[in-house]
Amino acid sequence: MTDAHADHQAEIAAALLDADDPDLLTDDPDLLTGEPGGATADTGPAPVVAVVGRPNVGKSTLVNRLIGRRQAVVEDVPGVTRDRVPYDANWNGRRFTVVDTGGWEPDAKDRARAIADQAEIAVQTADVVVFVVDVTVGATDVDEAAVKMLRRSAKPVILVANKADNQTLEIEATSLWSMGLGEPYPISALHGRGSGDLLDAVLDAMPPAPPIIDGGPRGPRRVALVGRPNVGKSSLLNKLSKEERAVVDSVAGTTVDPVDSLVEMGGEVWQFVDTAGLRKRVKTASGTEYYASLRTAGAVEAAEVAVVLLDSAEPISEQDQRVLTSVVEAGRALVIAFNKWDLVDADRRYYLDKEIDRELRRLPWAIRVNISAKTGRAVDKLAPALHRALDSWEQRVSTGALNQWLTALTQATPHPVRGGRAPRLLFATQAGVAPPRFVLFTTGPFDAGYIRFIERKLREEFGYEGSPIDISVRPRKKLGPGDRGRAHG
Image 1 (tube, rainbow, N blue to C red):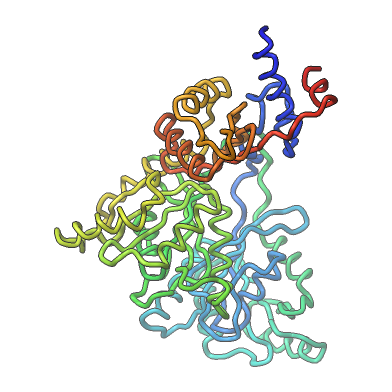
Image 2 (cartoon, rainbow, N blue to C red):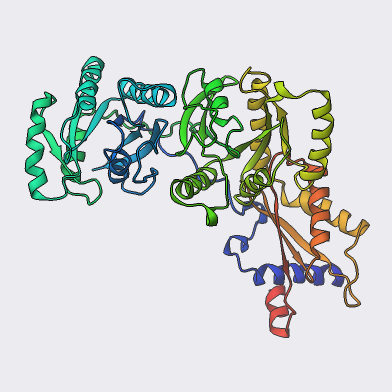
């Protein structure tokens, strides 16, 4: 080994020893951070518990109590929940799914009718129904009509007398025996009174738990549908699922809670999440919109890939840019779907091309598809696009191939001289996937422009279409005599 080569190896070793990330301190850089968390054991489908009732009886508050966290959007006005929205829950070791629904009314019209239809579908697909009545009001005509609907479903029904915040109101709950649904459970969803007894009753009404099967296959890939209000997210979800899965209305902002759907597309099952339209910055939103923004951000974080819908018939807006930025900052794979393509004529197509060049210049790597959720045009292109994005998101380049390529690149186009010297690349490794994360060990800081140059060339060489890339630089600390000996050792 030559002295120059030995010094270079010492520099690399010292750089690795200086790294703050313990994941990088390994004898074999190819055995760094592995694939993202493996699939959990498949224990079969979780039982479904539908929470139904007329508007403003506290269904979403009860859902938050049942799942043990504040996730369903709650506001002191009727009609906040519009779709049927599932949440994972666990009680006494038994997992199940709680479905929040909009307020049910027998003679509803227009959007209220669509909301009521979603509640009825939730009842039909549930294993257990939790029927919520406001004990401070008592049984109303709407409640009595709901009882008839529930009896037709032939599903186990648990009657909940909500808002029983004290002992006097608990006694009032006994009057609900007259509804013919059995024992009413007095609870206070807001304060938690009686919720444990209710959960025990829910578990007793569920079908028997299936046997646990270890080593099951990986679950469906998680896809978040995001975009500003009224770009057609719910329409696309309904088209893909071939049913009216989400409430669609011409009024922007119909969806408030994220809506999960298992969708068969391209011969496999995907888990789609329809989210609320991001109208304002979270800091400036208020009330329902504030919590909806938080849920949407959480849905993006929980997803693996996001489909950002843009209205191709309208100019790309600042709101669109914020949505795209949120997905990139979350590190998720990205497919941009230009919806309402059936409304685009030749003139609009010309101006849209100009807008894409100008407004999406920072995202040349994003996969783009032109679709129409209304007519179904080209929605079959989504599955291949999602696969390409996810393959890139999980792509790994071997350390040997990465260093060979990067060494040739930085020798052909060295870093600009700064302060009389040009920093050099010592060693590089891919420290993780989902999203791809690269670490460059160098003799000094790299300019942001040079890092962007490396990213552009990295994409040209290895692809990474549809996935963000994170490149961090670890400048080497100056070696003292003791450090140099440690590096050689």
